[in-house]
Length: 152
Image 1 (cartoon, rainbow, N blue to C red):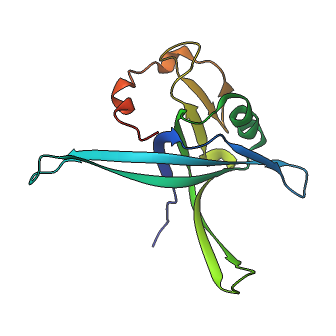
Image 2 (cartoon, rainbow, N blue to C red; image 1 turned 120 degrees about the vertical axis):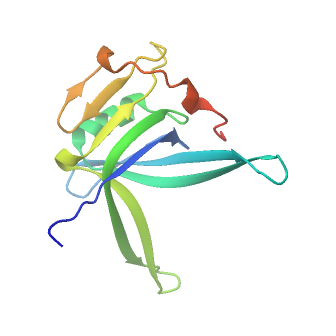
């Protein structure tokens, strides 16, 4: 294989307020839980069905952590771009190995975009490791189709 790519792009809603903690090295880390949903009409019953996937997001970039802490709340619609990472640890109560797969935002290959702003309707805000500009009017989009039947 000549090369490889580890890149994840998601648009979804926060299922809870972000959790920000201090690491032992003094830097902050933010953890988010994002829901992505798909819905369809069942052909046999005509009933509307929906499937929701939950994604764990971990942000190590200090600038993004500050933005997350200040501006994001439960229900916020966001676009994230990062890398998949799987952690392994031992469960202290059972002694069994446990695994967790997360989307990690750190370095120059990650970004976070707030897709809606309470103060400005559909005005989008972009924050990434390459840029940090709030607000940015040139990213206006009609996101009304993304609000269909989110389960919270």
